[in-house]
Length: 505
Image (cartoon, rainbow, N blue to C red; front, top):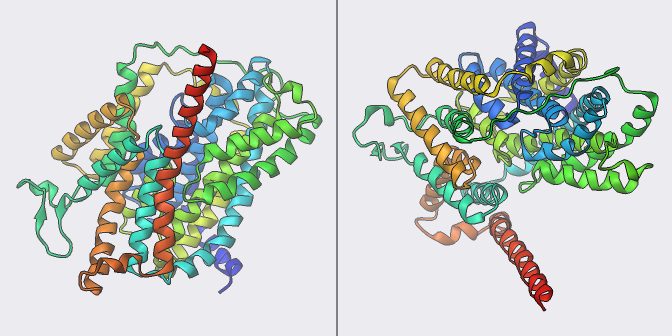
């Protein structure tokens, strides 16, 4: 069946009344939590992960998709009104958006961000539907050695992409890999690193780890910081709607931002922040009024926000087709699949076709819902911003705890939640990225399984790992993902040192 036929089947799943309700709940929850200060899409998705635990797989993943897109939308509201980006990709939106808000043009800034996100999400989701089948056909030719090389590429790109230090990223990754060893070995049936504790025989619960590292760790970090966090909320003055000039200055940046953000998001070593900065640079070069940049240019909101949301859809390409998470949010979405025993990748398209295409169709439905929700309810989201920080993070703590109890009612699990929350706090204090730990726990056992299969087939011959051209290319990319950032940083430091030496002379 062709792509459009499969997408039509997906709409039959997505447009079922209960699934529409799940999508509506997802986008509302995602936006409501996403607009709160300091909470990015990754934390939103991690916090709401236990909410979807008791639903059927289709309803759960559709709600999850709504939460994902809603969290992305919500992040732009805090960036514009509070100058508080929830994640690095929202920094560029804050540059011009907050300047517009300070001039009393917060309404048009929020409107161009919402409509730009809608346009970008719509085009990029269709791009996902068109590209995914081709990548799946290619990936179905993979053997155990190729899958292992792909996992190594995932490990290296995530470790190198997050944080300022590749060494710290790799350290966080190996911590996650070590946690992934806990439990019963699937091939031998022997218990590993369980220390005689029955609760550890099933391994570490990914949901517990994700919620603890992202939500509990962030809460402890905020509680330990001395800053009062009293940001001034800018009221939305005048009309929320865009003028004719705003429309004429926004529609081209929306399309350009989509064209820049989607391919970058789909790359294994992409990342939304690259696309947003590139989009901002392009809009600055092409602007009719370049002098407005830095003082509230609407193009500087429209382009980067479209690039951000197109990149979000782009990250689903490697996640769904190859099981390759390229962002922190994608890593938590991978955990969402795994809580139902589903592993994203080419076999998911083969074995659970209606589920995958229902999910892709629900992204389009969620996009429409978000546009309808966001424009009329801007006033409500602004009121949510006025929640005092101490109440906000106390609520997050309670919500995370109740979610964990609902997913796995166990005193031991609550102890694990606290222990991993403290670990998340310590990782943040010492500058270690969080996402590689989650990726290591999720993909570590799968990588081990594929490695052992490849070695079993080759009777212990290690050269099987570099036997095929695909494996060689993937392992080369993995090495480049670590080496290139190191070289670039070394060159940057060298330039700084030579400049300082020149200044002293």
